[in-house]
Length: 163
Ligand SMILES: CC(C)(COP(=O)(O)OP(=O)(O)OC[C@H]1O[C@@H](n2cnc3c(N)ncnc32)[C@H](O)[C@@H]1OP(=O)(O)O)[C@@H](O)C(=O)NCCC(=O)NCCS
Image (cartoon, rainbow, N blue to C red; front, side, top):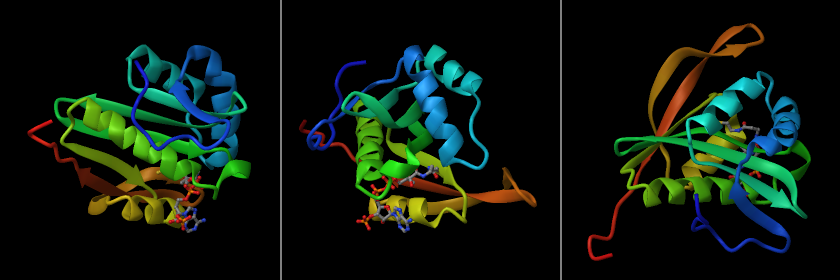
């Protein structure tokens, strides 16, 4: 993977492809950021499958990451996450834009994601970046008291035919 288009990084914040050697740092964030975190095996499988995966670093330390899968002309954001103590500073929006730009570069026409209806901050972010709710997957996520539905959100990508 080469560099991708995103907003210019402010200061020492940078985006680069995720590597196996990032997985200790990624797992440390994942386990603090989610009540039901992914396992290391899931991240390893994503890397093995060659999914576009990025880490956001600050002073070369991983502070966030995002993973995408692209099949035919549809992309799926599988994970987007910022370290809890670095949230609320625009890093999530930066990562999301980078993932959408990555999908566009891979000629996807649409990007999907799932989100818990209780994750209001993430939903707000997705709406503000142009994602719309297109459906619901009943009982998709594990939850403390059983299961929680997923909202399915999507954004259509348009191409400049002259480009
Ligand atoms: C969702 C997540 C990636 C957002 O990252 P972030 O760096 O905190 O978000 P940003 O600072 O870029 O905020 C972008 C927008 O998100 C929304 N937002 C973020 N946190 C919010 C909160 N707690 N309440 C309401 N809106 C919030 C706002 O619209 C904000 O825009 P604004 O600052 O212009 O108001 C981050 O909170 C996270 O990693 N959460 C845990 C993992 C997770 O739930 N991932 C999403 C799975 S679907």
